[in-house]
Length: 464
Image 1: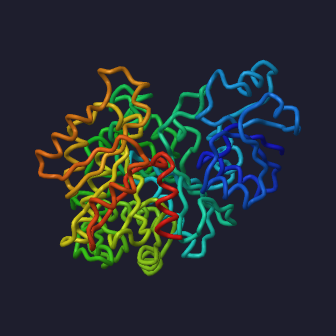
Image 2 (image 1 turned 60 degrees about the vertical axis):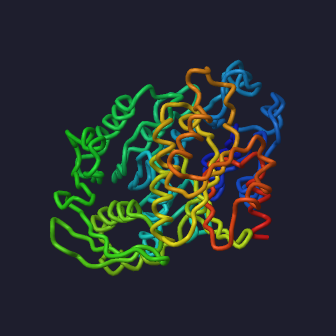
């Protein structure tokens, strides 16, 4: 098949493009504002990419089908031409189903937070046990130095995103993935641009539960009332995990250190042993329990699971240590929801209890630029000792009454005893970091974007 990707430089789109090429298909595409790492990833695999959009692209190379990314909308010149000419097109999730899900036992990882780390960890446990899974991850898994693998085994591991598929398919992506195994890590209100409330998000999870086969397995966070509300009834086998001993899988934290976290796992109340995970945060233990439940069902031994958890190297942009800046240690994290921000900062406090924690936060997502979580955002950021706030991303696109109030956020942070500095331009970031950072500080970068281009410059300055 010959596939043309419209919007090829997004993380998921580029990953799928490379997977398809590895499978033997011809692949190329177009996009605008293309930058590393995905531009490098596509170039490495010799996938042609046109910069910008033009109707002429549709005539330059014959294709069998267009994959239209969910960043594309009506009004795009190529979208309009595709519709006018009645050319064959599909969405990314639908093509994933056709090319991969239909041919594997799918392991689908869902939840508001932790999808990328949990998907990477699940893939690594299977790989480390010699099962050679296929996978598609929304980030670079360091154990593989890749976001994708074609795989020669029976399993395909994929993030199950509740965001919509495309302008012509407003259903959540995960409805296409028909899980044999389903993980529901957590459910909170997010994606305020497409969901009006938490109940509407829970509704799509209920619908997802309906397509897990009877002989499949759903593994769900039993400590979360929001999750428990969607797993009854379960049409498949069901196991819950969490701290409460009432769950099928539970745990006890044994200790935190700069090397990670140690914990004990219990199955139906009985201990199965002690484990180590090389990243801080109790929420990481819950990720470990979720993948452990599936690993055991697939047949992995406790030794294989213990070795897999301990040898996990993490994911790029998820608590990733860059190096030193002004004698402070710099970590990068994708956290962009108040809950994710809080647990990330709490984890760094546990890892480095005697060091000052500074966070650089960019309000960027459709949720954090709104005032929906005004108070929760302040509470989350107040975990840090100091905060640098960047400009709010594309604030002018929102009605005034929906916008995050930067003034209120700053005042709430100051009332909580946190040092706060607001930046009017992204170009002010280097000077602001020079002013606020002290030797032995921990700096956390909290953004899912590029900090107006300063992200790449900062990374290059630190890592060379």
